[in-house]
Length: 103
Image 1 (cartoon, rainbow, N blue to C red):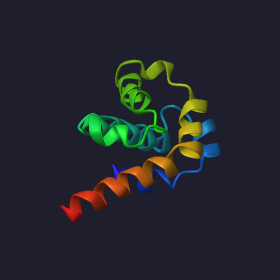
Image 2 (cartoon, one colour):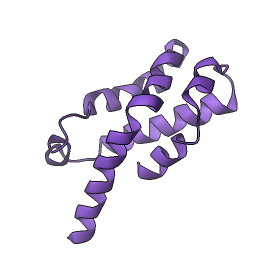
Image 3 (tube, rainbow, N blue to C red):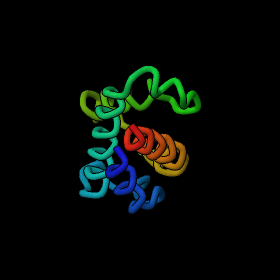
């Protein structure tokens, strides 16, 4: 997850907003979001409960939308994720990884 979050930071939300749905830029961003979504499903409920400000259900759901309803993906939703959600998610994932390192 952390790797994909860091990769998403390379993209300008405004550029993603106007990018063609068939562009490489949109494809990379959407794939990173799919990977984050799928990885979030493997986190324990206990771990996720420690970060109640994160919409874990929404993270899981965006992957389903990108996989199964890709023709209905709203560019504004993707741009908003890039603008508003990466910081808190990166913080949570970094903390979870640090906890694993501490044993």
